[in-house]
Image (cartoon, rainbow, N blue to C red; front, side, top):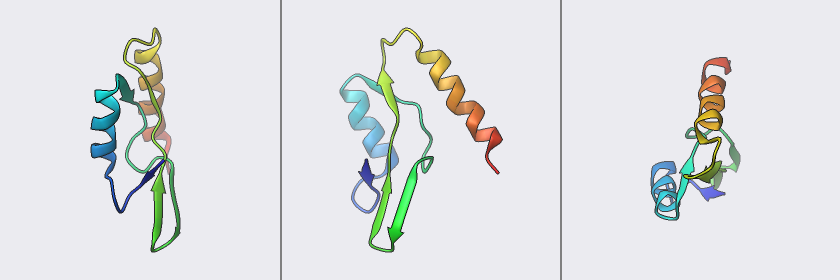
Length: 68
């Protein structure tokens, strides 16, 4: 979970990459905004050596085209 006022999706993705994870969710995919001061986003990440990494990343790409 990232508080968007303090850390951007890209910055959080870089930190997770440094830890051996690849973020497969796009920016704002799991955004939760309770009010103007509380704006969060959850990032979905998997280990870069995960056997199904390509398949999981493709599922997220499919979601982008299916969003209203």
